[in-house]
Length: 113
Image (cartoon, rainbow, N blue to C red; front, top):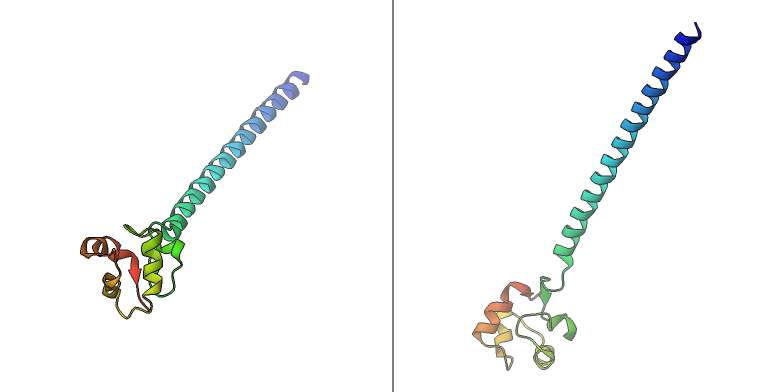
């Protein structure tokens, strides 16, 4: 009878190890899923909060923000600010240094409210 008890105890221990291993696998998979979701969330947040893709209001944007526009440096940013208020985005072409080519590059990133 002692041998049978030892064998059933060994079977129980083996089953407990298998169950613990399965729990560990589930925890690992849950951790991987959380990391993937976090990475996707960060990527989505960056897409909408990236200064290089943000749409700027010409009447309220700061000089630093305006400098993120293609073809706009510090002097042009200050000239844009001096030319406010703008009624239409096309009005920014009246600013020295902003021609048709520069305007076409910046057009997707500017608005006027």
